[in-house]
Image (cartoon, rainbow, N blue to C red):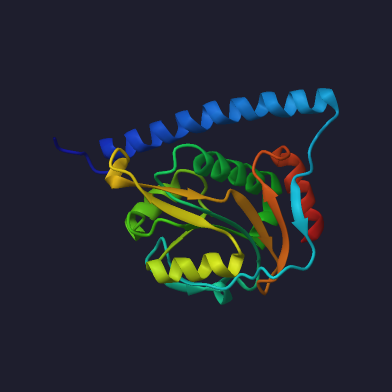
Length: 213
């Protein structure tokens, strides 16, 4: 089948369709949760930890354009960092859509924030895969991958965790488990706060981040 110049390949259209269908269902559920939470007056705090911690933004990885990068490349901006993988069926697409909403709500202030998605599945999440995946969510989203050792080092520095479990019934024979936190790091890489996706509406998180900029 031929593809006209400028036409989106069927595979890309299918990927985008699946991702946005998943995101739409998840966000609808979050909207119901937030509405009930407000009604009951029992909102849980979105900030899990804040202040000083032995968490630091230190990494040597490859971005979705194929460039080698370190934390120094983003030292002039705050960093909003999430660890996940592109084959993740739920938490990752909803969290990245949530981050995209926060960026849109920040408006011009979003220029002071580097939104970073670091894969915990570098075997499958190659540079081309990451490039296609992050483009679905936000034009500013940065996808980072690397070797197994590089990714492991990054997760250690952020004090986050992930685990690969072999399973013949899973795609490619394994699946990944990982933490679902969103890290806010100061310019220079120091820890500021960590959030849980869905802990509060994106409007509230955008307002909180704007106060810190």
